[in-house]
Image 1 (cartoon, rainbow, N blue to C red):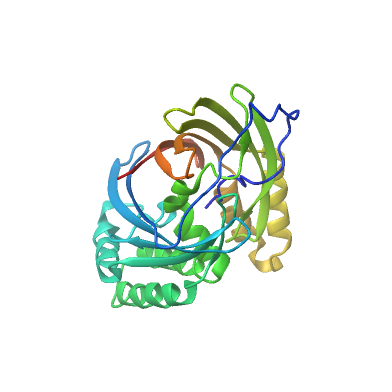
Image 2 (image 1 turned 60 degrees about the vertical axis):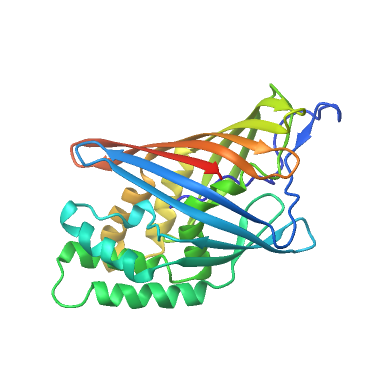
Length: 309
């Protein structure tokens, strides 16, 4: 549910000599195609460990003239973001059937010069397809827990911003770390607001970036990123969300907000990028969370590995 770092924002460090600074930029050509393989593992304490693999073909449609691009992302096997995963193995067949009915997923995305997805141009078509499949999945007398999961999916397609945030959460890894100006050995710290679309509030992200190595001869950069969230801003976001709710619903919605926002979360990633083109070569991204639960926090660990074919 969290957006990724805002790569193009101003960052806090002294200006470096031009000769030592490296800017990671996309230099792509209309018609160019790249294919990326994604592998994801995740484990929640006390629950089953999942493994998922899929491929995404990225086609450059055009330049937007301001350093950004229009892209077509073609995903052969539909991937449901983590928040849509069934809470028990009993629901897995319903979600597998839904993914099979959706078939190939195609996203037309506009991205900015700093690697952020700024518009999902075909979100309404995607929403209509997903809603049709959700209606079929919920037909008959499905378990109540499935109905709750389906409602959550519907919420994530109620707007362009929510659909973009949902669908780009995983596949967007190939876009990073575009837009940064980095110096080897000099860490960069950035704070910015991260919108949580389902709750309509922002939380403050604390991001750190470090250029681990620059190999001009090989044309490769290795960049490490870390992202965490400011606890005070999370508490403020919960309070803001609850205040907006009708009085009769505040307690229920407060519990929901605490569940979604009241978690500890840290993202650490290492990206290897072609410095000549801006295309990602490989990445490993690790997310660790402490989830609020009755009786204690449940540990959650998720690992993405992305490689360019």
